[in-house]
Image (tube, rainbow, N blue to C red):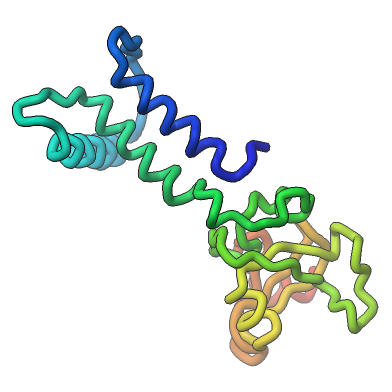
Length: 186
């Protein structure tokens, strides 16, 4: 696993090399469904036009510059070292991909260690199957605020209730469960 910010540095280095004289031009072939391809090409062209605004008058901007601009924007957003957790060596964070484990959440910010079976109720502090990584919102407002609950064993055996106890909806691995599946899982 690369350290946070490594991909960002590699993409920026590629961008620097791409403007050097004699750089290698490489073709890229990507097969996508037609509607997705049209949207992707529109995003690349839009990024290329924005890039052209920062160039000297009349200077041609190659089409690959739009793709490179999109990549730079993506890594600046998702691989910023200052936004990454400081717990680089923690295996639980690495197992979760440095993202919140709550169903549907992809937050990489403000991650916190959560014990599925609370320490105060005898949960093992060091057992990896009792630990998951949650964003501050899902940890504090969800788990400890009564808006969510999880139980089971990480990473694949976690059962989630999203919502208050009376009206919550149950999930396992981001799949909605019906009441029969919930009672069988308990």
